[in-house]
Image 1: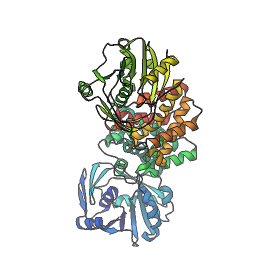
Image 2: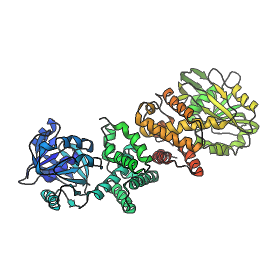
Image 3: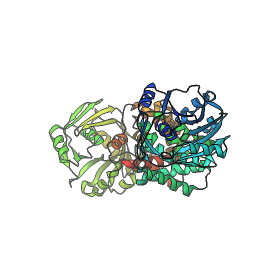
Image 4: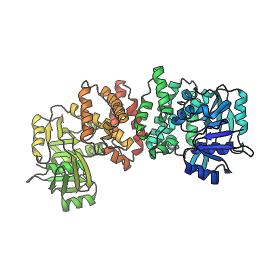
Length: 295
Length: 295
């Protein structure tokens, strides 16, 4: 099977290493020649809780070569540019797997004509260098069909990965798994970015905990979920499990990089507007964090 | 006239220098012997937009010597400790002037048996050292009677200051002037503390401006003011006038000192609870900033 992983950040590097097995090639698509050269020379190194070294092919930019499986691991705000080039990368039976934060990209990927699945990655990853990822927290990749995907297609994606590296779980419905992750991201990422704290602080300090619960309540109300008790336990558990991690949004904020604000807070705010549900806290956080944008 | 200024931060130093005139003694009460020694040796130096050097007496801690005028310039959360010692510092005709942020201290100072006025200081001050204050922005001290004060008492306070240093305006009613300052503080201080920005950024960046307006709307609703257009212009004008200043809350937050959260946000939140007016944004900011507390 002909596999491409697009995006060579922490998630892309980790997933490329996960899909690389003996006898199966993986092409990792990066934006920078420098990183491609480094990857061609050294492969990908996983350290921390999962140790592995994988040789992958590296390619600068999206070409015209079609793939059987395309794993898209770019930031959510870069999904439209991948979708725009989708035709040149896919044949009729190409399977797409999109692994992003938030749910803002779903509208975009609906434009693809191929078979599309979405995934949620729950590992604590830290990019140590252009070819090195430290796995700080273990978890799984949850995948579900989004469009034109059969149960068998989903199973194929699950089977193709290296089980020593990646734990994949398949689900029949994408909505619950993406919503869960979205809620956790909406609760944890903006609050850690704005306070400069690690994830664990949110459940250690009373004021932060109350702030997080009030943000949670707005997110749950907008999504119309009725399992809020279980969801709250999930969010608290994520904070505890990743206590010493800095959220991706905190890291991006501190480095003045573009934030995934629209995919996370923006999606909930827009949905709230449609449903006429007030989201004053989500809105305030969005406005205060918009400094980080450097589009 | 026998004058004491309690509190030797930027505001206390500035006010002590303001009330020191030829032939009139001012005792500045500080907590630290080190600062008292420095003040005894060098006096107070004002730099920046107002330049002055004033010799004042310095005293460590509140004694039992009574004063005719006591200017209380401690942080709002330290007002209760001054009120508790009030009896030993005052005779029947002692005039008190309280100059704090927020309105949280009003309940406390109602316990004093003497004549009490309150004031709002609108200068941009930066404490450069234990005896040096840089005046970065010009303004005025607005004072008004709070309790047992006649118009004449208020005039006396106004007359006793050095007009070359301090511009004093007297008002018949304390509520509007304290509310105005409270609203400006509620809009500017928490947002600058949480974003790490100078005051001017709040009106330069669209997201911050929208955030500030939404915080303003909650504050105005709670106070039940009907001059919100004029008040909003006032808040924006303060941001522009103090564009290059770091708010006191930002400085305190960065240095992990106790914040005046209760006097500013806390007062509005409690008043909102009483009036059954929702203040989700004020509450979220309060919760997120409570890290700074090091009581």
